[in-house]
Amino acid sequence: MSSSDHQVQIQLVVIAGAAMLALLVATTLSMYKPRGMTPYGWRKQNEKRIRSHP
View 1: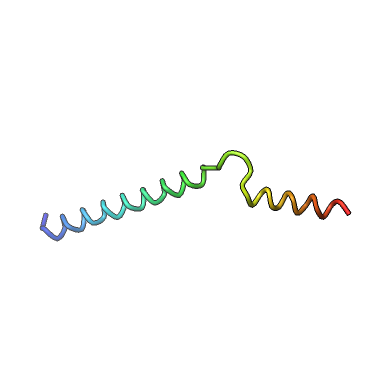
View 2: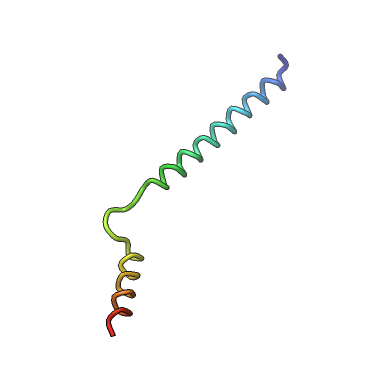
């Protein structure tokens, strides 16, 4: 095994590790939800309430 083959293997492992880390971060962020209603939710709820009452 030559030195360049070894460098390519190391590079592939590093790239695969970075891709796995990116997937884990994306999964963690997609599963996180703040408790209660967000400010956006409050605003939309109030807009609906205002429109439904003449």
